Length: 384
Ligand code: AN7
Image (cartoon, rainbow, N blue to C red):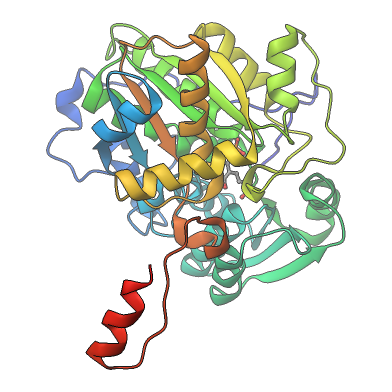
């Protein structure tokens, strides 16, 4: 039930042993989603705690491709998951595992989405749930979800990193099972995003992912590597990690070519989901970027908001700010000449627009108030 190796202190990783998967045929004909790939998930699927997660839309975005300056761009819209973020892929496996271990309750620290997702899956599983969030720093929609699904919401007077330290200290005392991304089973669920991309597009792609705690990019890379090892994929994609300029510890590590992460003490960005200064999965993520000959970049809050607006207004895809970081980053890398412009790009958009309902961010912001009369409407419109 542990999370770290007793010998070296690093986070545990799940190794898939001998599985019999002869080809993609094995999965075809099954419903899309995380459990389509059950042979590759190390948990008893007959007892799964599921709300139909995964199987999210892969959306071709020609207008966004032009805006970004690349030939072909797709959005993998993780906002279409049951609680509106990619976390659900991890929680369906993680919470199923928690039941298998006989846990009586679950706990996480969160910038919001993990809390929303865990609260929902814990409710479905009948487990107690405690979520620790940085006070005043999580988006309204996410807080609403945690409350609605009946979690105990603990507001920590500190940032996400402080909340996670507290959770790691408190979990065993409280007898609760941790479902942050330091939990290796959760990442097993998240790796299925790679399986879906591989099934739809093959290996010859570049995959851009917003990076906070470094869990998702690690999980996605693990998924691709497993398919490659099983002979289901002929090659491997290139991984692109994007962080916010004000919360850049992983990007700095990669850019400086170092081997030890230097934490950022006071991370700051409008993308609260990735306002993280001490990412726990940095070693796994570093392997992902280096092994895939990938790249990492940072983007400003302004670039994030521009990308969020472009997604919403050019393609009709509503995502929260952190999710737009992947698109903002690809645009910047394209301008810098650091991506392969002719190789297909997939931007993983991790969470839904409604998570972070903040109309002030959108300029111009078109809104008028009228009497229920045609004359008044026509009059007011004439002033626009
Ligand atoms: C929308 O909910 O860390 O690099 O506590 O909500 O795997 O951390 C959220 C992270 C990207 C970063 N996009 O993923 C939390 C939390 C969105 C997110 C990330 C998060 P990781």
